[in-house]
Amino acid sequence: VIVRQDDGTLRAFHNVCRHRGCRVVDAECGTARTFTCKFHSWVYGGNGALRHVPMAEGFPGFDRAQRGLVPLPVAERHGLVWLILTAGLTIDLDDFLGPMNAALAAFRVADASVFRFERFAENLNWKLVVDTFLELYHVPHLHTKTVGRYLEGKGGIHEQFGPHSPFIAPRKSFMPALRDIPPEQRDVAEHSVVINRVFPNGIVIWQRDPVEFWTATPDGDDPNRCMVRLWLLSPSKTVSEADRVRWEKNWTIVKDTVRDEDFPMACTIQKGFAGGAQDLALLVDLDLAV
Image 1 (tube, rainbow, N blue to C red):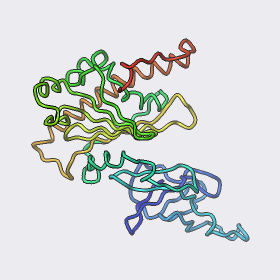
Image 2 (cartoon, rainbow, N blue to C red; image 1 turned 90 degrees about the vertical axis):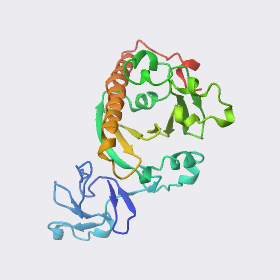
Image 3 (tube, rainbow, N blue to C red; image 1 turned 60 degrees about the horizontal axis):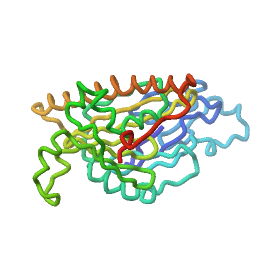
């Protein structure tokens, strides 16, 4: 559970009661000054401190100060929250992000607003969600009625930033618009989609105006399942009524493409490997952003 403190900073904790290990917070998000475990009503403050123990006299020698929620390393940068799920470690975002720092800063996510948010429980391994954004070979075949109308399917330009990797996917307008323009004068961004894969489970996609932010969280009990979250971000804090129709169209295209086309295909991949018929995957340059 991640909590905004009164001074504006963030703190994060394992969502586990220090009495019998129950889940303390069930809500996806919200506002609260305290959190109460439903099992025995142990109460924790927003700073993680254990505030109240019913029938405390039944716990002789108990040090309440030592039984707060277990803190986790958390930081905030580029409008995103960064979390390590192992207590006791430290976050060094400069070292971790490296050149990806500048790439994410250019998206100005901190200045954006959430236009739409949705989460999807999927019957596939979380790594297949990331794999959805790794290549363009499938675009003209799987996405003929959605993004295949706008994107080329002949490869993109890939870079490696340590564990992270941005790549540029050309739009169909790329060559017609830029073929006769000298390279130093080309506005490549106007005719491209920029996909930043942020290790291990984040995807940040820039499409001129909108920014898509995807995360895939593994199901700890079942490697064949995961929770996918999608935010569509507008570049300003408010969206005018004149722009709303365009933004709704963007949202529909994103969902129709990835949720209704990519993910069902990925579910069949999951079943294919789980069934044992496929012991390896054949990968060539067309399968990758190169």
